[in-house]
Length: 295
Image (tube, rainbow, N blue to C red):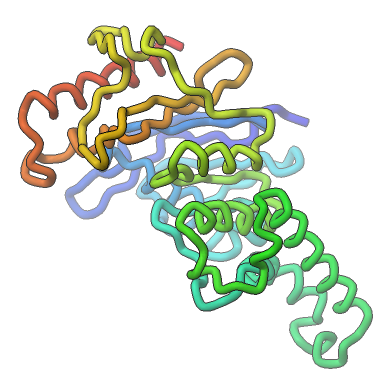
């Protein structure tokens, strides 16, 4: 099979006079993690919205290799991206069905397959074996993923009653229940503490979050941070920490904890950070971008 899974060419997205994505090109390979990094407002979520059919790009191509057949994603609309192209996603702000049970949230993700098996309701109404077998298979798939993240005992609880970290993990396995060819994770560890992030890694067992030492090159680029990740926003007097996911020896994902770098990247009036703190955030951001290009 062709190693290349996704190829984005000259992607542009404009909202009136605002250009959110400007001539972006990149590729992603099968069985690899590809990271899109940038400060708040850089357009990362807009890229995902284009890939998953929420937005129609102004220009450019998004080509998915589906079983060696090249598929243009922009020809699909709405739910057909997940149904036909097998592209799934999570959201920066969690979008579960809070009043439905944990198990029901995972069954909803398999709605397309269940509807086909039910003959679009008639086989389900008649309770035919074809539908009953598919329904049983869907429940087993849901239980499989719940077991991986340790939520089997909460299958009947409302999703909205779960702790924040568990809701994050539930949203990811809901996406996995669609059997995606391409999975787009929009800041999947946002708001998680290191323990929760460690639990999240069970979904990607070959890649573990590792704390970066103060002498890691990412802290010692153009701008030197001898104490490691700078503290930008004070939460509870805990030290800032930098974690990373590594693949074949390369740092492919950087996660800042108890730092809130992006607070210092926003307009000064948003968080009222003093100039010296905002400069540290911008300098650390420059180090991250430079490291990504060099490595």
